[in-house]
Image 1 (tube, rainbow, N blue to C red):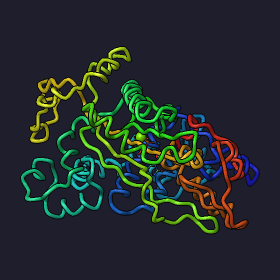
Image 2 (tube, rainbow, N blue to C red; image 1 turned 90 degrees about the vertical axis):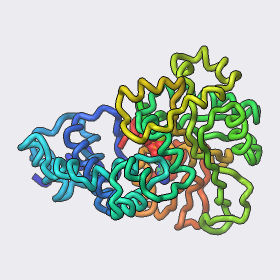
Image 3 (cartoon, rainbow, N blue to C red; image 1 turned 45 degrees about the vertical axis):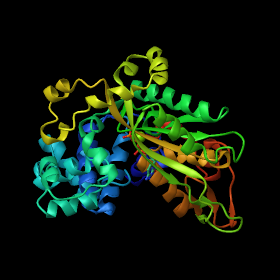
Length: 399
Ligand code: DCP
Ligand code: MG
């Protein structure tokens, strides 16, 4: 029996970054349940519990067949008592009573609605709920002043809560690529996040921009943003600076060199016609959709993101969350690995590095604490090799 469990464990190693997890999930009934409990824990400021559920779900995602009996789970890592109870409940009753209870709870529903607003995190939602705010109309009627991000989030609530398709992501990619090439010929842009892992939909579109010549990327982000803004493609943007500067003899710490812009959180205005195909994008890129602004219906939130409301809007564009990241070429491989995800895969990579290799991994660098030095890499493959891990391609990082 000992041998048997050893065998199972060798099939499913305990760190998600040691496993190949494709999008083909044979156990969605269990992973959906565990993910919902993870989400509820994260929204309730219980990150430890959240991670435990995420890890359990990830183990089931890595299995090659559906679980039909608890005995099949013997020897598998990361399945704690709580997760096993949930799985057992689903096996025996078709659903988990805890999950059903959570889904129905006013608190969870309110947390979901409020954190569904771009710019609203769990803490803010929690504060509002304590004041009796459970819905968007209640929030609008309240005296709360929303920040710029939250205002934009509220205004585009329905669009931003509708999944982004790969086709929409590709169209946005063409527009961003055009912006990048216009302001810095020779710069390179890569699709990152869920779409790089092969997902068909996502909550946003993520891009990484660099230039093969170190330093040429400095100042690039504001130029890209200005270009997009001048063409009317941005409904909202917030650019944050890169505060990272590698020091020769110590771990990464924030620098005073604040002239490298690094990240832009934006809400893109994607013309409907552009979604049809790539042909029309060209025209739309030249021809700003500025004049269509007036068709925005600010009443979206007041009631009812119902289908009929959406149809009645007839606005010829939709809002899409887009994240842009600029990295110097020397950090590109780390940025690429760090921004491809999944979130759990990233977390597990960093945990592996720290706990198993005495290294610190970030989206900027890999530091070896034993040798007291940074380990360079110009590809993801090299980083996996530094970490003593078998290379896992993006499509198999869907933990
Ligand atoms: N990321 C991270 N830590 C953060 C933000 C992002 O590790 N604080 C990484 C992991 C994510 C990737 O960046 O996979 C992109 O972030 P998203 O939130 O966009 O996640 P995905 O693209 O994976 O999911 P979705 O398809 O829903 O956009
Ligand atoms: Mg994403």
